[in-house]
Length: 555
Picture 1 (tube, one colour):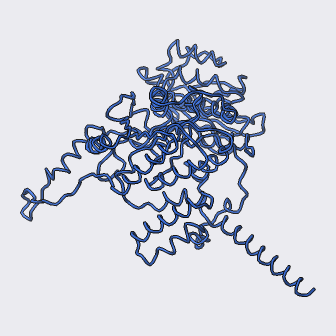
Picture 2 (tube, one colour):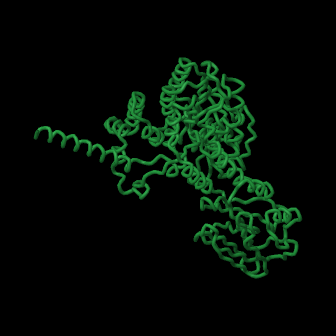
């Protein structure tokens, strides 16, 4: 009896230790999920596994954040009914794409596998790119091989003596992150709220970060560096002399190990009745400082290589005109596309898949279920990227249960045309805009279409009140002659851009958050209808997160 009792105690103790270990590991390991991490590779993996027994994916996308930002599977389904999934992740090394492809084929039988080609030219070791996926992939024979490969790459980078440590950290994140105590925050101890993961691996973005660089400039720089031309050295006497340098400073080439992996993926695709499509999404920058810059030299190298291999290759930068406007469609400089750019690329890609591969539309209940949430995020994305006043307020009409806050600064009278006045009246504003004078202050609050407050004056204006949901707000406006300042403070935080002209903040009454903050320079008659945004993606992220929590469900 005593032996039996001791055995039970031992078993219970072991179970307790295991539970404590799992709990500690979940706290200490890094959180690769949304909104802790915007791109959320853990959510991408979780959603893939949740969909495994629910959908049959006709196409799967693999690659780095370039394809993660640029390819939208929900748009493809909405337009065509073709079910696809984006398994790309931030900084995804090509070997990670290789093992993810093998993992995908365990449960899916797509007609086409689309791989983004940038990783073929980059053999630099990025530890995060591996752990984003390793930490979220369930234990399997495939993961063991993946972990072993990761450990071998770690050993090449940091020494053979570290190989065992790297292997253990790949299989047990606790080992990798056990010293993270000092970095822990309250969110690490809080239970994660159930989210409705609807993205299908895509990263939506409404930020705009234009660049003055051009693709032609990049290719000119590449040729100059490659040929070692133009390098000089200045002597002590201040006279420049040509530097004699025969060393190869820059010579892009495909990593042979990765090419072998690609050929193995081609074989795996053939064995599973799938076709392999290699693509390259638009991205440019300095060839030396930006590893993912897609130069003409790289494009030609890859085209020559694929021509001998029988692999389909689609170059979306040099062989296709997507109509990308890098002043409006760039989400992270010239490296990623925002919502507008992703629409253009995805639109072309979905047509290419239809025209060249055996994919066809179907009704998918899991994707249909997520469409209302997707549509809401798209509506806000289109609003946040509208650059014309009339277009902006037209998009605004699609939003429900909102409050509009208006506050003028400097001057709004000079650029007020009859057309703009009529648009403001259509919103429900009522003051005589035609009678406004230079430098007049102006305030207004419209809650759910009801004009709560409106006034203009040649002196500073201030107004405060509470919304129907109990949230307090205060507004101030002053013209050029009395301070030129605009504030729109909601629940203690000022959201006004304080740009010259009319400042507008849109507040979601249901979710208690700001959806957008813009200004129109109504003093400048030539640019009065141009929308000036904050340039931040935060409003979309907050809104998307609230929607995912609100519609959270166990899938």
